Amino acid sequence: MKLACSGKSSSFMCVLVVLLAGGAEAQRPLVKEALFGLATLQGITVVASWRPQDGCVPMGEIYTDGPDMLRRMWNNAFEVVDNEAEGYTFWWFEGGNAGTADAHDNPNDAVTRAIWNQSAPDTCDVQYFHKSAPSPEADDFTECHPWHANSCCHQATVVTPQAISTGYGAGYEWDRCGPLSQACERFFVMEGCFYECEVNAGLYRKFTDEQHQYCSEAAEGAYIPEINYTCQVSAWGGNAENRWQLDGMPIRRSMADSWYRACKNDLFCGTGDYFACAGDYHAQLAAEAANTTYWAARFANESAAKLAAAQREAEENANKLPQFGVVIIIVAVSMVLLLVLCTVSMAHSEKAGRPVFKPAAAPTGGSASTTASGVDI
Image (cartoon, rainbow, N blue to C red; front, top):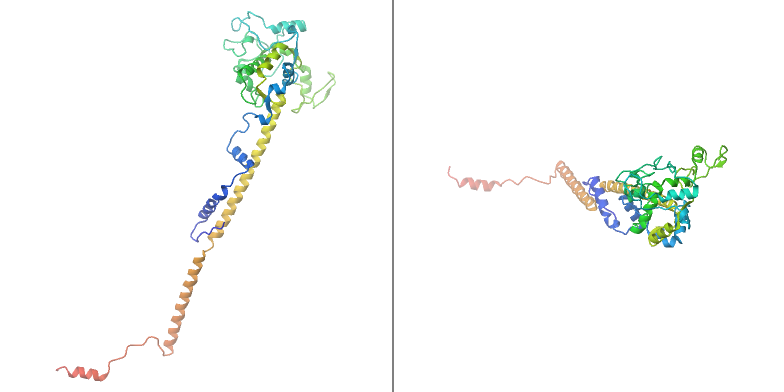
């Protein structure tokens, strides 16, 4: 579409006209990728939660039973045992007053005595948000109340289910595939409280303090001769020896089966591994961020090109006259030339004694005498 701007139009107005004239072009349907780019440029959050098409399926389709769920979801942190006397529990009902000795002891202390032939530890050996040693909590310690008298967790860490779910950052929430049923979510709260607050969990650290100390300062996969140990390389980079990971902690089968029944119809990410799901989540975020950057750059470049083209067209049009203007100028110039030729011709005739315009003829003598004779003097 060609547009002509008059000689009196400013370049700005010409640009405006050109841009407005592109409205019909802009009404064509946008492709899917362009719509996504516009959405991201508008600041719409694309990853609020995963959708079924992103790998979220019912847990009953991911796991075969309770033991399979606990083993795969928590990357072998737990193993399910049939002997209740040698299996820890994620929950119990304690009784007693807040911050004082319970009417009913922590049943996990008895499991530690049965398996380890020792009392419960007096230090919190799992370390992330944890205390260094267990201690009582105040009256407002309600979410993880079974541990109120002897807890390795701080109140701020477990103040609400939301705090427990989101405490480790985006991608580690248990409702990453959408809201869970109350029955199902309650088991995630139980496990979260157990991991954060249970002093006996420290007996099942995957790595020792010694391994953590040496490998934290060593190259990836280095062999440490002092302890005859080879550091394990983490999937996230660096060595894997940390102070927070559990391995093979025995859990009662009744607890595992109850959790599976409660969550069988709730959605979870298809791989089933809680930590691998977080990796998938962040990979998805990175891919969508890259796509957003691509579309932002593309739109910016295309907009700049269109504006430059419109400016060039406006400047070209501003220097052009419309066709009727050319006709008027030709006619006007022709008339001026004709007038000049006429003037020159008249001047030449005058000089040659052939004036174009002559004086009027004088009256004859007889007429004058007759007029005079009729007057008395």
